[in-house]
Structures are given as structure tokens and as C-alpha cells.
Length: 434
Ligand SMILES: NC(=O)c1ccc[n+]([C@@H]2O[C@H](COP(=O)([O-])OP(=O)(O)OC[C@H]3O[C@@H](n4cnc5c(N)ncnc54)[C@H](O)[C@@H]3O)[C@@H](O)[C@H]2O)c1
Image (cartoon, rainbow, N blue to C red):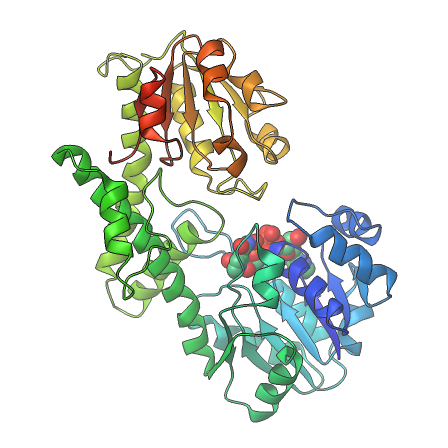
């Protein structure tokens, strides 16, 4: 099948790479000229394991093409996947300007029946407006479907090839048949439903994941007051098969380009339909507070006077982890960036290290120090602050860390270090909920 994928971001590029690998001819369109130029020579705009191999292999096999031109790609395609960003506006609603522009441009270039399939996460209700825009500009037949994306950055290729489920949202039998055929080589259960239910599956899934994180953090905070160990508590809770341990981990809160924005957008959608998603407002509030609680921990661990605003003046702190989670260089809504901004506000000096996300961070935090490795960041510092749980941080030599830190203090935002071992070694250790 010949396909067009609009948007060469995390979702679009992975979708294009995987469908071309499965034997389809895929055009990937982006408005960012530099991005398209780079992609044509196999240069990937972000870090995602295995993606570069897939892209290069399929460019070489002449199954994957990059362009800025809708005209070059849309008329040849049976399916157009819309994968542009839907970032949050200041009021929490999703910014749909990229989406409307992409649908309008697609519609203008239709020459034969085409199935426009939305993979971007879009607020329920807007599909009617999108269809109206398409109808206004299209000179040929088209249909709309929604097939929300559930990939996780860091394991995006694997998730796209082996998803838990593929959601196909359309009432049209013809459209269902096309999407089922296209997805035939991909494993996972098929859920066929109407467009609105498909979009609701996406929002409800992300909302529940965020709820699990905030629930874990709420329990962790209670554990601190009660003197209980949240790791044992959640291990015990998560072993109940009805509940499961996934996403039930305490920390500095959820971040990234999806959960924070989708929770806020879902609350707005609820309001639009005159329904108050009370639970999600609490989930968001707990998440916001978790960062502030972590800042308080850092101040206390360093003996700083909580009353004084600039009370970390003169403190040199090492931050390990900038990406919103391991195995990505994505720093959108990263808790680490928020925490560093708070610490800078309190006049601390920050040296940071991340295996992949330093280049992106330098664009928004040019004035903090960056080092080539974790040990370089820790040398001579007043504390180690761990924020992103990259697996390689688990392997760090704690004896060496003890020697090179100015003060043996670890503030662990992910409960990554072995509490008994670090305390045995004489570190002052502060974790979450233990
Ligand atoms: N990133 C994830 O992990 C993830 C997972 C599931 C769902 N989603 C959803 O998928 C959507 C895309 O997310 P993303 O992270 O891939 O976004 P992204 O910001 O990484 O990429 C979006 C791309 O679209 C391009 N673009 C914008 N307007 C365009 C237009 N009119 N025509 C062509 N290209 C255009 C941009 O230049 C950019 O390259 C969002 O709705 C997001 O919520 C993301």
C-alpha cells in the first residue's frame, strides 16, 4: 500500500519507518525543511533506539521518502496518517492549529478516495470540525478514521510492531477493511469502534497511567509521615493481579510530552461536555506538588533555612538525568528541568549530566554546567540529585562517588539506589516515601 505520514516527529517518523519496513511505500511529510533535508540522508532529529537503522534501511530500499510537499505524496496514497503535534496552550486546552493546517493541506491535494487517519491525540468533538475543513477543500472522496497511538518513547519501534492493542475508530466498513489490512502484519488485539470512542480510549488510558503515578506518590508521601516503606507497600499492592505494578512507582511525578498535556486536555474536554473530572484534577494537583515536595527535601538535606528564599546560595549541586524518562532525549515537561529551574531560583549552582538529553537542555538552560560523564558532574559537589532513572546510573561506583562528592549526600528522586548499601557506606540518603 502507498501511504503518507504527515509529521516526522516521534509518532510520525516511527509510524513511517515501521510501515515501510513492513513493505509499504511511505512518504513522510514535514513542514520543517531542515528536518526533511536531514532525514533524506538518514539523520534522525531525536534519539530513539533502533529508529536510525529502520529509516536508513528503508530509504535504501526505496520504500521510505521524505518531503515537504503534500502534492508529491498525498495523491499517490490510499491512507494519510496525521501525526502532527497537539501541544498544550496556556489554559490547558490542546493547540490544534497544526492539526487543522495538516488536514486542510491534505484535503487540497486529494485526487482520489483517501482514508485520512488521525494518529495525533485530539480532543473528542473536534473530529467533526476537521471533517468540515476537509469537505470544504477536498475535490475527491475521502473518509476519516482515528487510530490513536500508544507508543512509548525509548521503546517506540518495539511498541509499534508489538502493541497491546490497535484501535480503529471509524463506522465505515471500507475504512475498517483498509486499516485492518494495513495492520495485518502487526500483532496486538484489534478494537474497532467509532471515532469518539477511539479518542476516548487514548485519553482515558493516559489519564489512568497518570492516576497510578499520582496514587503512588500520594501513598509515598503518607509513608513518610507514618514511617512506612513505600517500596514494600507498592510491591505488596502491585502483586495483586487485578492491580499490577506497572506505573505504580513513586518519584518526582510524571512528565513528558503526553501525560501532563493529556490530563489537562481531558479535564478541559470534560468541562466542554459539562462534566467535572474531579479525580483528574486531584491527579494533576498531586503531580504539581510532588516537585515542590522534592525541592523541600533538597533544602532540608542541605540544611538550608526554609524561610530564606535564596537559601541554596553557594551550594553546588550535581543533577543526574535531564530527559523526562530514560532512553530518550525528550525534555518536554521533564520534571528535571522544572526542578533545576526551582534550584536556580534558590541560587544553587547546577552541574548536570544526562546520557542523551544535554543538547536539548542546553537550548533552554544554556547557563548551567554540563559534563561528559556522571562522575564529572559529581566531583566536588554538595550533593547528588538523581532525577531520571537511566539504567547506567544504577551501575555507578558508590565508593568512588563518596570520595569525589564534597558532602556525601544523595537525594534520590526515583528510589533508584539501594537504601541499605548507601547508608552503610555513610551517605546521608533521602528518597521518596522511605
Ligand atoms: N511522543 C509520544 O510519545 C506520543 C505517544 C502517543 C501519542 N502522541 C501524540 O502524537 C502526536 C504527535 O506527537 P509527537 O511527539 O510525534 O510530536 P512532535 O512534536 O515530535 O512532531 C510533530 C511534527 O509535526 C510537524 N508538523 C507540524 N505541523 C505540520 C504540518 N502542518 N504539516 C507537516 N508537518 C507538520 C512538526 O514539524 C514536527 O516534526 C501528538 O498529538 C501526541 O500527543 C505522542
